[in-house]
Length: 150
Image (cartoon, rainbow, N blue to C red; front, side):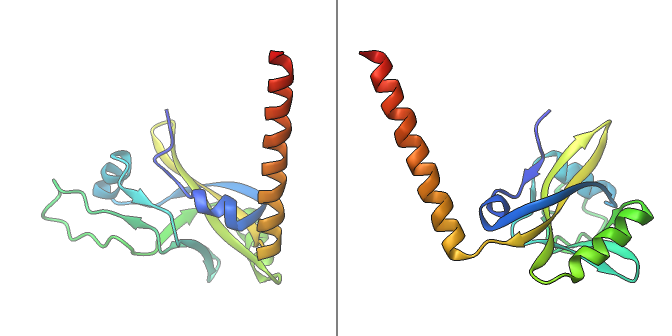
């Protein structure tokens, strides 16, 4: 089964160092909305507060068939991790230029899981260098393919 939501921009803007799998505390209507693919991880991040980990800024659209329950689309959602992982994330997030970002929401054994990563923001010249490298690789592959055709 495919992912419920991906943060594609994160792979472009950040260098990923470590990834973790976290459970996410959602209400019933939020789970249904996520399964419909109505979640957005863009512009969201993970924050460690008082020994707990929260997903901040993620948008999960209200489930339209749940009218009696008030739903807040951008509320902070608690992430479920082991204590060692939380301590490691807290230490990493204190380092300079390090941040914790969500990468994707996906199903696992009937549950909704969130893949998070410790990452450092790419600088503009790093992005340009990466684009140039991809372009050069594409040109090489194109030339090889053309040569094999002859």
